[in-house]
Length: 438
Image (cartoon, rainbow, N blue to C red):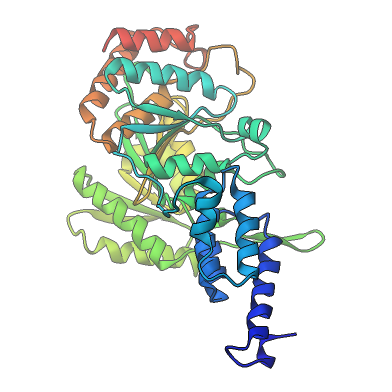
């Protein structure tokens, strides 16, 4: 039976419509609690009661009353009651329903802390001690993700974490494990896409006291963070044949290009090099290169050149001082930023930041190091330097500068250092040495 058989106003039509909606609603126990998806469906069936109910469902998704509210609202809808959600909510919870957006807190007053996997909890604890000793004492919302969250909550990316970052707008994240070739999707990639953190920002700076072949380097790698092959659009066409799609859009490319050139102007950088493979991927990388060059024309004081990605890798090894700012799409940026980190001491000392228009996530870019997890010898410097970038975002550059000065002073003295830097110190000893120099 369909509604088309009955004119508008016919009670049978109304009953059919409600039955369809409730049937769909009652089978929706697995609905994702994203308001946009729910709202889109409810508006498509033009049911104002269910539109209101979507707001109940989203705002109370974690509440023990959700199931009761859902059944009560469904019963009221079937009985033809006009405005059901508010009275039902009052009846069940004893309070009125007011749909609210997630509370947005002052930047830096509350920070989401993601300990991470492997050595993550050890280095995050050390970094928090340094930050608090320097005078940065926010309320930390400590929330698990990755393998730790999978064991504790049954999911590597709890909804609680997404809600927390939405509220705080800033997160400090330890390394997270990503299964290779199977298992769940990378939590790092999912967070970047969920919060539209389109700019991955990695300064490559030589530090006195850290042994490396090159000295005096001061490069910046900026990577487009939401598109490319990391879009995750892949499938098996037929057994033994897999297709992966590379997505490049003008909008996202313009956005990352403007971010890069704006920062280059503020930091008084002289040159931006666009890294690509447009000689082979003429449409995708061709679009990326072309749009970056168009944006570059708005910044005439900054030189813009281009380099094919394989040649760029070689040039970074031979003469890295030739580069200033490197602008790359997602996959190339992931590879070259790690390569560049090797020029100044490795991933254990290089910071990483992910910026969007609404929030930022600051992270250690190295792995979880399961072979040394629990031994207390992990290097906290990379995450600490990422935290310094976080302090700049929240307007506490002076505290960040104080920590940076103490860190550099400790490194110049050459001790204490962790085993990856040739020393024998523990994570705690490194943190204590930095605190003593604040």
